[in-house]
Length: 595
Image (tube, rainbow, N blue to C red):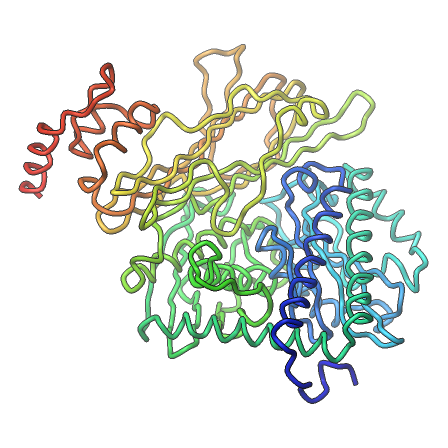
């Protein structure tokens, strides 16, 4: 019987509790640092599309690195899936397992989890694990997939597969991996970085147990989880009981262009618990545009409430990131829906749906939490896979995550050009791109073709990025929000929808407008894909925006003097860099009377 099954140990004193908490958090951070610093692909090394943490034998999250929320919250689902599928059916000291099966708990197939068991005094006491997004796992199209018929077209599927057994490498499996990826060298080296990270986490966990004792460490872990649960319940209890609903529409499934997909979120708040019910959302799609329930749908709901209720920047108390914060939240999605597909439906392109779910959770709660929510964010992702074949016959594959924008906030403008809601990956340096890939970035700046949502606090401004391929290539692009703009709130106006085009400088005047998602598009040398991410919605009445802020936005080129006058009621002289305050007061009064 392991320690987590024993009667509750005596409470750990507050000082020791905080020391152990700090140790847990440091271990998780060190695991994350080792992973991204040792990796070779830019999606892990630069963008840091990864997560790492420690877990007990009941698969509770004890700590997590400060990285992409989708990765960390998903690992308990991976562990439950591994328990169902584990090779040999048993853990041994020195084992290392790889797992990515979406119908056994994974977030989606490119996110490989690497898990190492933690043994202390000959007994299994926990796990050290991480996940990271890989460049290519041999799917139907390089890097990313969207329009495929089933999960078997997603590439290599691992379920409880041992890469090491009792410390010895499974050479057959390593050779299999090398022979089934277009970017085999990067894939293998990145997996090796994950193995190093997991083993380090296991080592540090044992050192912690040796220093403070097994009973004390796990008692502290339980206290920290209980504390996170109490704090989450307190914040939920402050929300008035009731049912809160919001809905929106996704562009399409990547194949059926005339069929938008509904996302409906109903929040049932009862006391100190909440249910996130996705009933009424679209049925599962025939493409990969579905969401694995255990590894992604539930995780997105947990992350959404943590953002609203436990944000470190707005909370007076910092609450540890562990399993306790998940316990008061129930997630429901009908089997056969886009958020809970039936096997063997493909479910690789699942991120934008999760981001929209969080966006709608925020919108649903806006009437009862006006000072804690924000306006609509881009709530999408631009995940682009560029690939081609070198003269040597080897593939090159590059994955890129482009930034979006947040909505306006109760006390400040929405941040510009940044991943939002479920994502916080970093941008990839353009110098790194040019050094390794036959591509050149022609343009990378704030979007200037459309204004952000207007409000007392304006929406954030999205990014525009133009990438030019230097050889014939293939592009797969997963994005959203080309048809429904980020919503304004409390009098704020809506933001701007996204765009994507293909052009070529050798064919001036020719512009091909693209859908938000497309698969395996063959392009020619010098073709340019330009992506415009959505601008965020505005928060509050635009007539309440400080005139000096409107002037600053005009001078920064975010919108014109005409827009300032027509929408904000502010008379700006860009040449003199001044505001006519008297005329502004008269115009704003007139605009208010005509509403």
